[in-house]
Image (cartoon, rainbow, N blue to C red; front, side, top):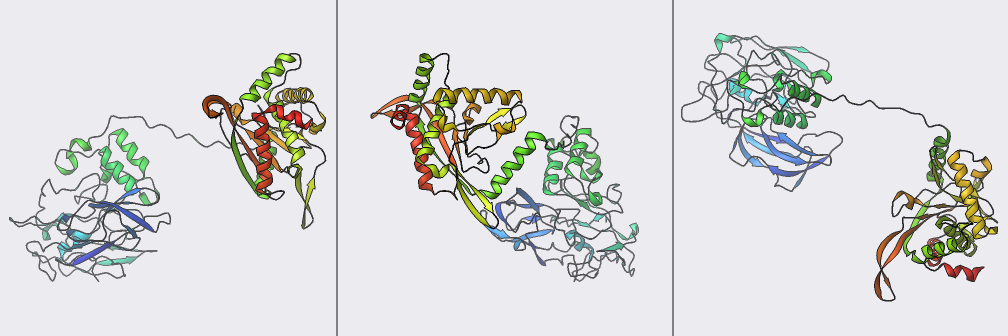
Length: 527
């Protein structure tokens, strides 16, 4: 089976494998319509995959017969994409094969294997630039470049063919490679007709087309240019002639950086030197720019506090089936209570964290299910309900995040709780916390509002069962007694271990905390 089209033969191009495990693509827009003439490697359609939008070139030349799918439709890899009919036979070429000069064209290994010879005009089906992931004819072949020659009739425009004639009767020589066959051809300049200058309107873009002349140093005696859609577009946008660019990828594949370097150096711009024409303004190279060095990755082992925190958080994620619930609350009354306490006892300052800690301890007295942890006893899981409250609080230091613990918090007054929080905070910043200060916690309070954020779903401090988070306190419109007012509003979140309680208990705990934030005087009822 020949790999070249017989004049008038219909050939269907299927959606190629676009790489990275993609199985389908959506047709964004067609670049051609039924009846249009297309050349080899002309972009015919834009498709969008889960990764990016890709320009798909057609590996066949001829007239468009069928567009398989409308814009907006989704097609699978391997499904028919476009059907084209082979070009009419050029002057001097018979339908059954054989050029007017009597020279036979080289055969190409087809999709099913084997070699075959065909007419000189059939060589128009061979592409000089293909997408990575699929080939035009057979992308794994290492084929020798052939010169484009053709003749056109005076009254009709035809597609020029890319051929390297061989003396009549000379059979193609094939030699086996590891995964492909490489054709050895013998060129005979006397057997071919004069090269025909094509209409500038139909001349392919030198930045994206294959080799145009036999003497092209970038392609003579080598494999065809292999381009990804991104590289193809980048070369066109920067006016880079890929025929003179040396690829740094595996097997000489041209990579993005190769095009960028060529554009910056101005050594491979698409100009009249390659085609005899002046490059259009869109293909002119941009001003030269110095390539910036790519910064190398830095590897830093986790040590000390950072390593301990990482291991504890990872263990929490592995073992605790956590859930998070949250609520917005009016903290205006809480701010007023703090100011009142400071005015009443300036020598014993009480901050918001101390008030929130006081509220948390009171909530645990009402919902002791959350003052617990789950332990492993062999193959069994054991729920441990703690008799005292170890109130931990997250403290950000230069050495990383630490969680000091206020032991027996249920026995401390609000002023004593505030003093212990201040002592532990100073010790954390100075790096003088003892192991006892960092162990024994049963619940953690996290004031992430100091970082200017409203909400969070923090990871539970293993092996505890609950973590109460507090967002920033900001002015927001709020309805008070049926009227709109500006209030101090914050968001409370509760991450809890779903093994120790259900959502009803967690919701009741969070609602009690929210009520006490909105009305701190309600704590007097529980004292």
